[in-house]
Image 1 (cartoon, rainbow, N blue to C red):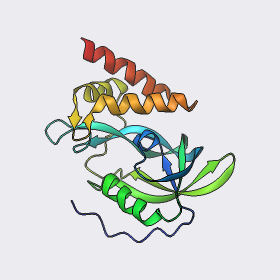
Image 2 (image 1 turned 45 degrees about the vertical axis):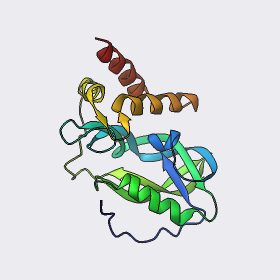
Image 3 (image 1 turned 90 degrees about the horizontal axis):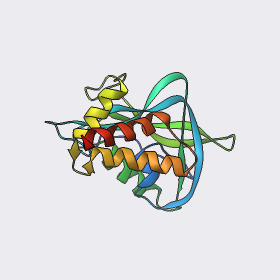
Image 4 (image 1 turned 180 degrees about the vertical axis):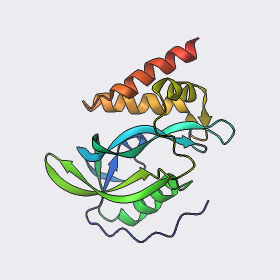
Length: 187
């Protein structure tokens, strides 16, 4: 795997915005976590997963931030422990930029109404793995059938939906998908 040659991230303190698996598995030393809102983007199962939650032969779907006018995404802003910033950026790049379908961005999130710059990973809508606009039923069928290097696709969905609910941030689409995928797998 080749990580793209990207400039260093010099933001201090370093905040990272999590909207999917980072919420329940950040994988870096966290000094603080806060509920945050990102405007102009929405959480969506719009990226085909051929590594972590699917394979090239049977791709799964993972969440990405997809740009949309008037949208907002509620998630978690993590402040990286002082001194761990560079190692965190390296680890996130290895994890998130595995296929270049994500783009690394510094975006403004709001924490209790206060703007904070946070490292974020958004979908590249021009990338071959972009699957924006799939009906929920199609998403459910893909998620129910896929497994990748990090496990079953439905495990990723359920963990994310459950952790969002625990934070008081339910996502109706994820809740519907979780229920539908359970029904598909039971049949």
